[in-house]
Image 1: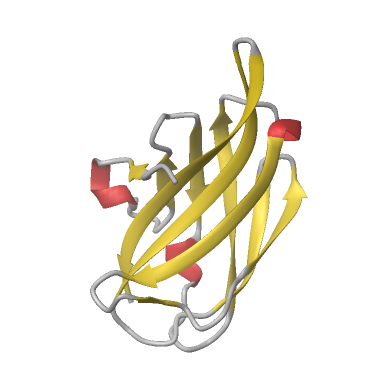
Image 2: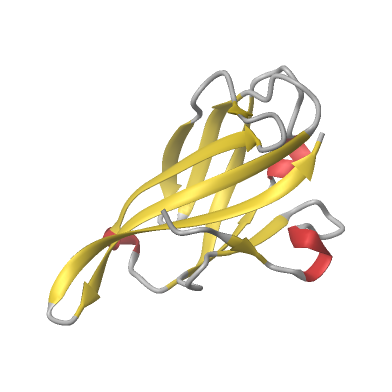
Amino acid sequence: MLSGCKNQSNNGLTSDSVAHLVSSNRCFTAVTNWQEVAKINEYFSFELTLKESCVNASQIVSVSVYADMPAHGHGTNSQPVVKKIAPFVYRIEGMLLHMPGNWRVAAEVNYMHQQQPVIQQQLETMSFNATL
């Protein structure tokens, strides 16, 4: 798994609470409204939109999302479901953060990429930290 990075301005969050994410090799730039809809100990949904991509939408094999609390060494109690609602737009349903604290949310994009002379499957991670 490649480690992700976030846009360094404003710690990845803008004043309107939309997170702007950049993947580690800069293949993807994404935005999400995760911070403005997140709830503690209650299921919630949010959207992830890939604003820029080094590949076509048809080359994206899958997108998955998870959250963990690095300081506690555990993740969430359930696995959210990612639904593609349009090219480059995904709805994440069933996210459950069962306690307050510092959470790291990560999106993994699995895609096919042409690397001379073969096509290889690659995985990129974008993540950001948030305190709830």
